[in-house]
Image 1 (cartoon, rainbow, N blue to C red):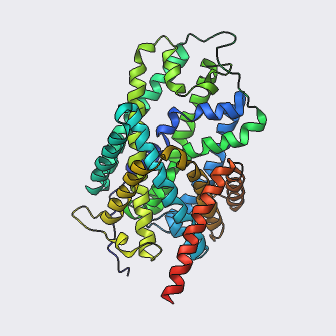
Image 2 (cartoon, one colour):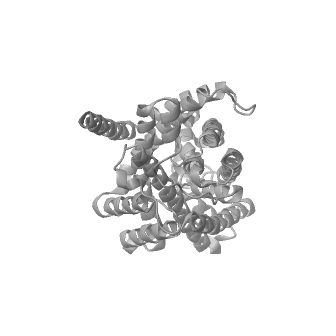
Image 3 (cartoon, helix red, strand yellow):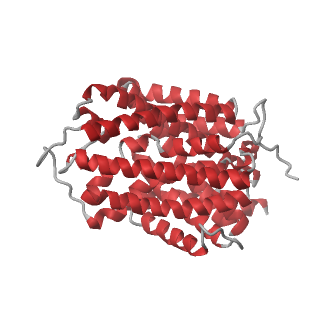
Length: 414
């Protein structure tokens, strides 16, 4: 029997799927197509397909492990159970630190969409408000996520309609021609992959899902399938509507797609949808980081008080409040848009650990053969080390600092 108070199982398949899909259809969907197109050019669709394939490898590995170990913490727990304490720690530390920076960037993006002149105060207010929602329990989190997800999906449908209706520019369009090509597919897939990474949020909530052996795999695969269809469709439509370098040069490709169409008057709706996407992704991120910090504190890899669960709604309130304080501190003291890049490397290492852990399982379902874990492991490492050197070195330094700290703490305990 665990000495720690357990979280309550309150989420069904629809709730868990909404949280995963809400994470994947975050602010990234409104900006990621432009830099990816700049790298891959007209091969953008191939980059989306490759990113989706890697995401599938990781998703089925996470689903297998979450069904076997339905506890909070995701790959941190799986790494410890299947591979040992150190792989689990590296996965958990990379997730908590990298995603905390992502939270700050997501909140700041929301601030820029809502009121650019007051971006930081609005970002802080968003973090405080969403943390308060989480403290009212996971069912409130799921409800708000579904509301925000509905707004985002409606916005994406409007953008798709604008891209289909046109008018479609003929010939060259002002702006630099895309420099990318087939050689840029891998780094473009690396960018697109992070748009798919939200299903990890479902696994981190393993302790709060009803009938986890069935619910978690279904929710992960349903969320990934929905996101894949949407991203693939948007890539095709944007390439057809914003050709000849305009997509690669855009800072807000979905907004540009609507502004240059017959539905241009609806551009403010896209801005509202982007703001909702930021909030939905931020809400899911705060939830997932809090649960991973809870799991790490239970194993004494983070300070013990972070493992406290309490209140009427049985939430990890110390972890949630500590995380909110860290995000607010980042917003006040750093340029979060420049430091967040290293989190990409951390996420891929996180999923490499997940694939390695899944490989050690004795039984594998037909849709997730063992060789898929091998493919997922090496694909994650390949995408990780094709990222810009600054991102790789930045996260490597953070992982090394965490490992050194843990080593010293273990020595002191002995």
